[in-house]
Length: 133
Image (tube, rainbow, N blue to C red; front, top):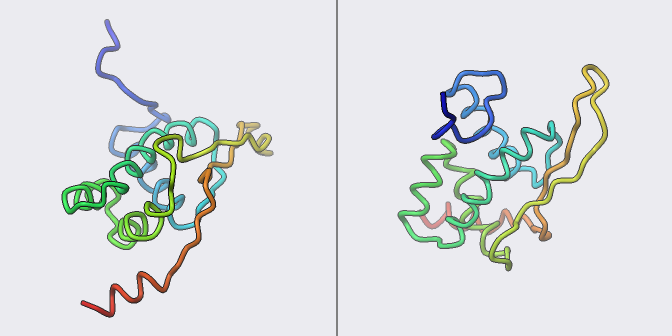
């Protein structure tokens, strides 16, 4: 048997559950700018999130729709495209993973994932946009 076409980690879950897990982690990272999770989850989430940030930097309608489809959360997608993406000046490597010790219960290696650049969540820009509609 070969392993062609089996990209990504399984996390001991079915495919839809693993996808939902990564999607939820991505939404949390975008909302809170930094989260602590297991190292394997952080590494897997970084792959998807950096692709979304690259799409968000384009800023066109097609990219926005792709981001909404992949996140399933309109507010988070708007936050990413309108507030976070314009503040990122680099072309790749948007996220950093720092090891954060081991979890007490099962000794899983933990990691903190956050943006490399300092992001100022200017909520006023989103409020002004909603007021225009």
